[in-house]
Length: 371
Ligand SMILES: *[C@@H]1O[C@H](CO)[C@@H](O)[C@H](O)[C@H]1NC(C)=O
Image 1 (cartoon, rainbow, N blue to C red):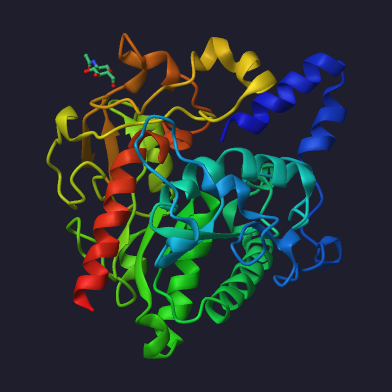
Image 2 (spheres, rainbow, N blue to C red):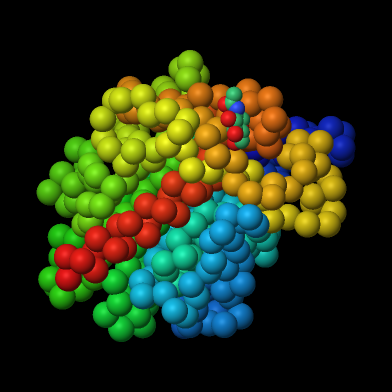
């Protein structure tokens, strides 16, 4: 992700002191368990970005885009989602404290609202905070050296999942994840599906593991890829890349061959799917009001009244999801020009917001039909 580098450069320019900015955003020290923040207690509301069991936490996951005709199901929902957030911690430590206020601000303002929120028509949203690996470490240390800190993060994810299973009374659920969260979700499923009792795994509907490399080979014997819109007990994954962006394509191949399910057809094939199947995108920060909206107005433009339909084509090829450039659209393209990170990473959910919304509903219905 280029965002922290951009932030560091900005801070350096403002402060005129590159070493200070470096120290703020990056650590040079090796991982040490002594520097690890304490584990969160998932009985506490402060350990959740969203949880219907902790009324203080669930506000941001209740958002739906204006003009989408969608509504939040809240307590009428028959299902739940256990959703793992991406990296939202940019300060100079290996693992974020689970109660980091800066991480919470970022997590709640966009990912939980706009990404996890896509589930809220069918599901109650559970999104744990956890001792995530910082962005600085991901940028500066080789992956082989990140393992111990990833283990710390995963320890929390596992504890949160156990709490979730125990407190959701046999209700069916999805797992959802994005970016760093997708790496933890992959490990969670590998561990849980191999060992859990059948009565517990029978509650699981499907996993939407978006925005990271999920090699099919690593899920073999664990969970199959979803190859149709109504298949259940399977997983969906994709990484959106603008047609021709080979650097982004190569990035997603570093950790193996990524899985690509086309969110315009929900098939795992290499057919180009046309704009007529695109049900609607919503811009990032689409719910932001006030100062944020004013500051970002030159980049994002006017708040959208309704999702932008028919904006792009999509095709799985080379393991990634090639899409036509959404920012090239003359009337609404400016809303999709803001994309820090690799390819269209930050927009993986928002570009397909309505397709995801409809598909979550279809898969939920299929699950109940199967009984
Ligand atoms: C541009 O986007 C709008 C809104 O999503 C859509 O209706 C229109 O067809 C798009 N134009 C082109 C040329 O794709």
